[in-house]
Image (cartoon, rainbow, N blue to C red; front, top):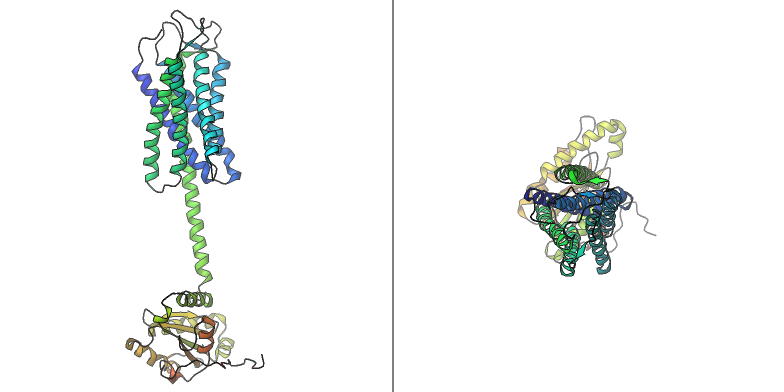
Length: 428
């Protein structure tokens, strides 16, 4: 019955197989990245697109084999063969889309998908309902089933592998894999046609409900459009989800930054300073890199805020922040510790390059003020590791008031085991 193949339909069947394989890989990766509540729509869509693609490839390949009579098919068997491909694809995608999968589940997914392809193929051929029963070649039958299993395993394995790739490599890897998988799918189909043949002179059943005319190029074009729309919709959804995830990440980063920033001045806040201290002290070589903490407190903050109001006071704080920043060179870490308090964390505090900063800090009372009221300062300092080896001890030691003239002079700095802060109850 078979003399040769129609090359245009063979090529069309391969193109459909490529798109079906690409869709399978696309949806396999997509299902694995969505939450449980959103999996069902993707499973249904993926199963329909992938199953329909493989099914279409089969019937386009059938039309590529010229026959001496009009090719017709039984409607019920044809629909069942389509359902077999769709259900097998859906079940396989469901299993392979799980977060973790063992060898047993992978084997089950492979056998489910390959079983659906084999059932679809041979039932689709048998749907011609010829007047004579088909003849099977055992060798080619085994080869076709082996190819179906191998193609299914490759599709599912590559689908999981691609999930770990990032960027432009994903599309290239997916397309390359689709080309190989399509060759395997077509190989299964055409070896299957060798495995199941009908005797010379056999005729299709007269009551077959489907004519084969529409199962060539028209069906291929319809399926190509269906798969293209499916991939486009999925790609659009992925793009939307990535944009949403990016915006969410940016918002989370902004919130995280705000948690460590002072709203009024834009400086690192108390939490940021404490984190910086903990990170610095946790280093293995921390003792090889001493640093100083300089405490600056607006002594008359309450009077200033009472007379100026909140908006004016925030403006004054911003001016103070700029003034202190101008004094501190780049390595110095400036933070607002509380409403009235600033801290400077000075690495390698004995470096001569800080001499100008220390001199200006000792002149704060003369350099920073407001037209309405002068700003008076309290100051203190501590040194790691001389006055403490923990953030709490260093902060407490720095908050012991000293004369402004002592800022930047560390000759007599030492630990005070009986340290008591102003206002602290010594009995406690």
